Amino acid sequence: MTLVALRPLHIRWSSGDIHLKPGLPVELPDRAAVRLLAKKPEAVRPVLQTGDWVEWLSDALPRQQGTVLAVHLDGTFEVFHPLTEAKCRLPARWVTTVCLKA
Image (tube, rainbow, N blue to C red; front, side, top):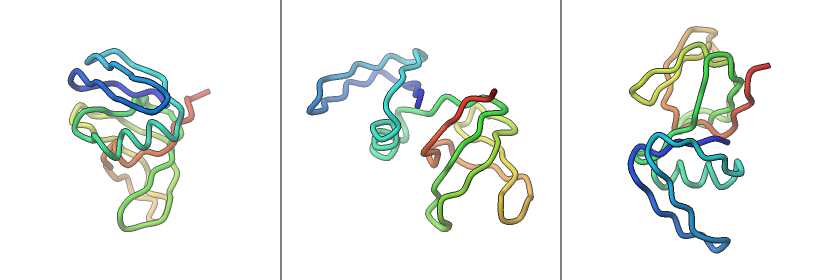
């Protein structure tokens, strides 16, 4: 998954250190990206584009999937909710998987 830092960030992992600079996207393994999003939701965001297929996990519902309809500067994205089929706006920090559009 590709993440972008919102502020300078130094991360120490057992596999080595990572230095993230604001605005510069970095590709991380999905597992590491999800872990980082959970620990530092105010410091990083996944890179999303309209048309990307995403999977997300909310606090209230099981894992859901959908196509990104819009991406907003406030760290949210829009999808058709798979249960209600209504357009909804969700926080990007809930994203667990991103598959780029074809």
